[in-house]
Structures are given as structure tokens and as C-alpha cells.
Amino acid sequence: MTSLGINNPLLSIHMTYAVSPSSVVSLAIVGSTDRFPIRRVYCVGRNYVEHAQEMGFTGREPPFFFLKPADAVVPVASNEVVSIPYPSLTQNLHHEVELVVAIRKGGKNISAVDAASYVFGYAVGLDMTRRDLQGEAKKQGRPWEIGKAFDHSAPIGPVTPISKSGELSAGAIELTVNGKTTQKSDVAKLIWSVNEIIEHLSAAWELQPGDVIMTGTPEGVAAVVRGDTMRASCVGCEPITVRIAD
Ligand code: MN
Image 1 (cartoon, rainbow, N blue to C red):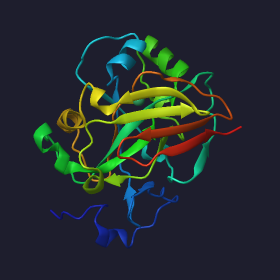
Image 2: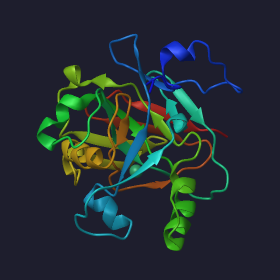
Image 3: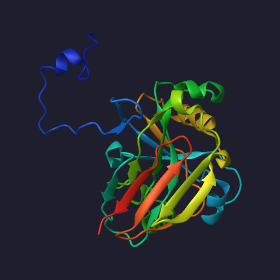
Image 4: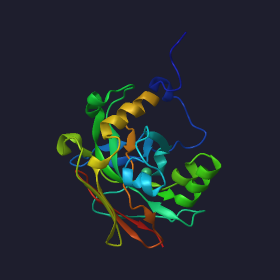
């Protein structure tokens, strides 16, 4: 049997596509002209106690995960204001500021003590959520995609390499809307630390270079409307500014 397959680069030279393949979505890297290409966007649910409580839950449950498509990511440079459209079908678009971890090498069943060596770097991101649609999906026992995985639902800033930032385990994470603070916490308050998240996640999926993990949001999630400007910041990361288009 030959091992040649459709992913073999020697064969792909001769392959033509019936429709144009999507381009790779990538993030800027602080201090480099290289880009960080995104493969998958993993997200952690309810990973700060006060946010779990505001959503009607208590205590430390095992971490759980959902995904957004890579092309839901909106790359945001540190010195620009990026506009995203107000999404369809919702009357309750929420912001969730989150520490985002970029993965540099593949692995499965990674232990928390080894996890830092898999981290390329960190960014701040927004897990935008159609809260009304997510709530309805929860109530009906349906998947969350319509509430979480819509177009433009993941603005993410430049990646700061871990070689510059060091391992991030404490420090401020904050979101302002039109200059007023709505979310303010500390990444030390993550129920499951970045290293523990990587351990749990890599037991369920084999991580690959280019994966990013949105690690969960602290309390203070709230609605934004057309014309609002959000500024997201997190220790060790370049802050970003995202506007909801008129
Ligand atoms: Mn979230």
C-alpha cells in the first residue's frame, strides 16, 4: 500500500480545487514579522468562580470545552480599532474578555507540569456571545454553536511569545466599554490554570501547532450595542480595541 494521500505535498502540486480554498487566519506576533496561523479555537466554559455564579452555577466542576471555527477569529493589531458587525438573530450580544493561549507544538495527554513547553505565547481575546441564543440552546439541550461560533465572534490581539512574557499565572484582566470598566479580575483566579487546561484539553483532543485556547471569562459579562467600543487588556498581552459597527 502506498502512503500517499491527498495531504501529500508532492501530490497537491497537481491538485486543483473546485472552489477556492479558504485562506489561513493568522495573528500578529509581538516583536516579529512572522504570523501565528490558527488551526483550531478551543474555548473553556465557566472558568472563574464569580462568572460561574453570575451564570447560575457554583463550585469547581471539571473543565468543559467548546470550539469556534478558525475563521471566526478577527485578528486585531495593537494600534488599531477594528469594527465587527452586530451579528444577526440576537438581541443580547455579550462581551467576554479572555486570556488566549497559543500552542506551539502538538501533543496529547500532556501533563500540567509539562504544559508550559507547549505554549507559544499569549494574547487577549473576546469570546463574543449571542447570549439569548446560547441560553435557548442550553434550555433545549441543544449545541451552543449558534450562540458562540458565529462569524466575527472571536476578535484576538497579537501574540506575545512566552519568551518575552514568561509564564502567565497572575495579573490583571480587564474590559472597558466606552471607557467604563465592566469586567475586571485577575488570571490567578482561573478555576483551572492554563497548564491544567492544557492537561484536560489534550486528553480529549490531540493538540497541534496553531491551536489557540480561550481560557474563560471573569464576572461582569454584559451586553454591547451598535457603536460601542470595547478595550480588552490582560497582563503580558497587547491590549486591543474593538468596535461594534453602526
Ligand atoms: Mn467564554
